[in-house]
Length: 314
Ligand SMILES: Cc1cc2nc3c(=O)[nH]c(=O)nc-3n(C[C@H](O)[C@H](O)[C@H](O)COP(=O)(O)OP(=O)(O)OC[C@H]3O[C@@H](n4cnc5c(N)ncnc54)[C@H](O)[C@@H]3O)c2cc1C
Image (tube, rainbow, N blue to C red; front, top):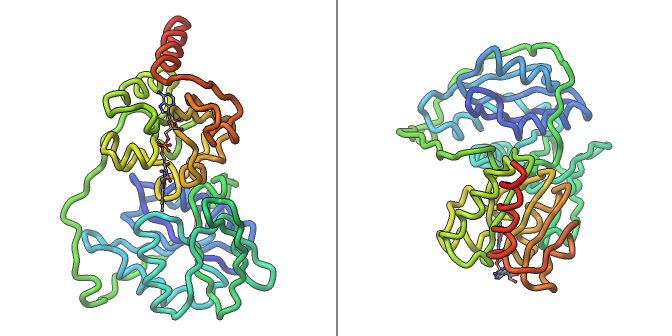
């Protein structure tokens, strides 16, 4: 079986999400990668090391990439069994355009995928309370959009792949938009999506300035800071902090939830954490149902004590 994986370059290398998908794809069949970005020997080596046998490389320069990428992919993937995309903005944009060009449905929000005669995708609805199994019976390729962290990215020591240059085709108005500026959000400490420890704040913190407490605790633990949608909507922290259904999916070793109720839309984004610690003044808060360790108490008292204890140890 032939599986294609879409990979967009991020900071000079294939996105972490695409490496997760390649790792899964290599257990299902031969893996070809459609790579969008400047490209480099280091990028090819990384793709090969995760199981890509071939790489089809398109560099759109400053042209907004989704239109040309979808057009080029439509020419390449017609014999494939499936095409995997992650949940990045460009991934979803290209997946939708490719589905329209090929006249195929796209199955989104996947958490697992299997291929036993047909392509079958597992996903969750209603905040993770119900599992849905979707069997793609339509003509291949099946277009599957997978959630981040559905699989772990693991190198397997594969050889460097064969790399083919893909020409930039004229897609008319769909290729007329150009990227005029790129903004990289400044942040300190580990990235939220990759962090091993996350300190996350909710509405229970009371106000924006109390996030300084989260920053201090995170600094002492070498952690990243996250938050709920409630605090993002309140403007206390930027959207990049948001964990949950409409934010980031995280799987750290330790997730410390401070003043977070545990709404299902938040929980779907962090329930894969190995150890969950909750601090909440309400003993009936739903977050305690999935916590390994719970502190019933006021965050404004518990967190400063924790910070003092950590400082005393340092
Ligand atoms: C379509 C949709 C998508 C959504 N996507 C997301 C998402 O991606 N991520 C997300 O997080 N939410 C999401 N939500 C919102 C979600 O439903 C909740 O509203 C949100 O997660 C609640 O955030 P919270 O826990 O900070 O606030 P609350 O639910 O208000 O909880 C605050 C908690 O703090 C506790 N508390 C109060 N004061 C203190 C104190 N001094 N000390 C200790 N504890 C205290 C309270 O007991 C309470 O449990 C989504 C909702 C919808 C409808």
